Image 1 (cartoon, protein in one colour):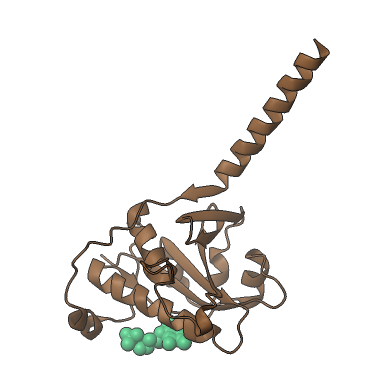
Image 2 (cartoon, rainbow, N blue to C red; image 1 turned 90 degrees about the horizontal axis):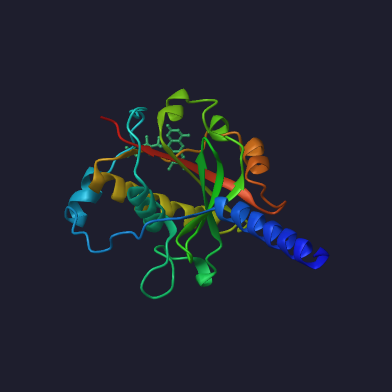
Length: 202
Ligand SMILES: Cc1cc2nc3c(=O)[nH]c(=O)nc-3n(C[C@H](O)[C@H](O)[C@H](O)COP(=O)(O)O)c2cc1C
């Protein structure tokens, strides 16, 4: 009997552990890679920074998945959607949401929760319009030499995707770097590079 109770308790604790783990990992929908959007030259010609977001218009999970994929997903060659120096793939992309800080795991096409903190305010101290955006990407790296270049490639992909989809975005450096470093639980050698809010402007 003792043995049975012990076994039931063990199963319960394993299940609880599994549930807690599952809540911290959000599988993303597959991005649709077959889309034929406006011509590339037209997208480049009409790309622009926008600083107004409709706070009542959310971004659905498939669009979010595609934003993350264009920024830094895995491509058909098992590399990234952007070039990285020596293919080190050492950029990191985080998503800030009201329910917490999430890390983009491109290999698993999933988001992994880093913390329950709403860190969006630390992106908006100097530009309040940012608070209306539903999606907030943070680019980080430990690569002092090429980290910014990698982030630049990623944010440009997002600009072009946003232009194709009628989304608004602006790349930003005016953030509270120290608070974001803490909220994202970055290591000493890692640093925040940019913030990119994305949303609909209409
Ligand atoms: C490295 C970098 C940092 C930027 N930081 C900010 C920022 O903190 N806030 C902002 O509103 N725009 C920021 N911008 C956007 C520029 O202001 C914008 O790209 C520029 O005005 C040209 O407009 P366009 O992107 O529509 O061509 C930044 C752009 C770059 C490349």
